[in-house]
Length: 328
Length: 279
Image (tube, rainbow over all chains, first blue to last red; front, top):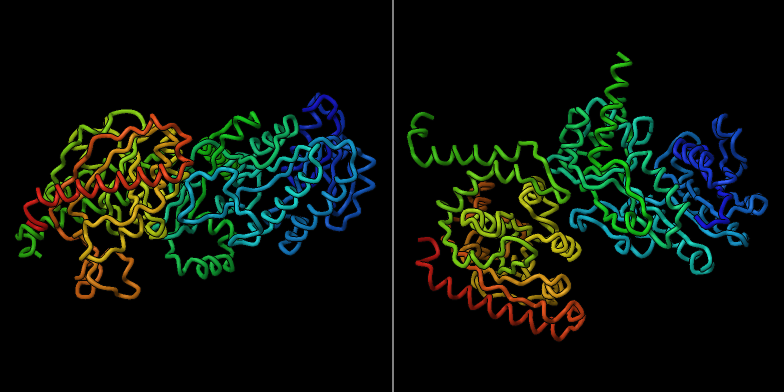
């Protein structure tokens, strides 16, 4: 981190991962002051340790609060792929695209801003059968293209950040493209799927998957706060693990379904309450998977996740077994 | 059933069915590419059966395949399913060549959309045909196998078998120049008779089937038992040109033509050496 960059502002500070990131930065002796922005109140312990600004990003009433906070680093962590409490499915597009637009407009008026770190997603590459086995950062579609709503939104978001980076060359703008985050305490569609009684898979397909453990996802953002890198950086645990082996390690039973019947069957199971709703990105990921190249993460960001993909899966499996044993 | 069981052919087919079912059901350690040595091991009886008895493969020049370090095998190609790549790997293993390494091969994109086949191909060492995959594999000092005819090779009619199609833009030469990998031409004869494409059947044109398909249904996907020969040529070392040459279109296309001519010559040699397509 630049020696003078001691004030850090985080958007989406009240989400589970955002709150953990804020705690970590608040514990960091190199960080003097943490300002959290969200339209939901952060957990009480956190609210006492950081300055909390209640603001709804897409509404755009952020400029004056941002000026007052005068951060040297802005972490845009309020980029949301799946609905969660306080983030309905309908609001996601507004939040991801309009929210980013408003935040960048407010950042444009900050003279002391040195770095912008955006929590993006490897979903920008999509999941395709003929895709390269390891996407490098230059292989993202140039514009808002893609098979799913989130993929198009995240493409639009990155375009906005790139335009901001061109306008403000003094600000180092980093976009972290995270592979799906897993963790025993997380509640996202992939974790809900891992906790379902059976996991529906595509008959005859066994994609290569890549994950990042939640603590490594936080570690990667913290690394970028300390050492901003210009442009996009893929974030993932080393290696890939096939879906069949992932579910085997988790001790899950599978329900293979022929591709044309997958959608209706999963929808019916969801209505019966046996399955969580998954979303297009997850469904495509379960069919074709995705791998990313992490050379930039190691070399430029100087970050190596504590867990490989296989170790992240094992860590989640161990925690889930402990949880089930405690419940029994 | 007892009557059928007494027939040698039925017994053979029964054991082949078990050979096929074994590896597909298993659970295997995979590397980051999804390559599973355990899968290949489990499939070895089937692969050896195909190599020795179904296609009766003769291999020559296996000593040209280096035991270590990156290298680019460049071969002629036909058909949607990469039997040619899998049999090249089998023949190298049987000959103890290539340092015991399985070649990693680039497969036409469409094969990766097929259920089961895509998984089997990946576990056997196949990756989607993308220069990014080939570059990463070569940087990892792997033996990489490419089929520059690509989809044009897979789609050519039976009458044009063993006539090498255009080598595209010479992408494989760029790969060799950028990574300093030697090019080893590999001529495969026999693979172009296993799924003869006699005509255009809408909807079926891209499926791996023999002309028996309309009569026999799914059994039409069983490849015909042609006789194969695989010949490996002496490595062509482009290291002297340096990686900058990869940006010189003229040089790249010139080398691509040279490789194509050499490979076409090798294919003809092997055709002459073969007693007959199905004998």
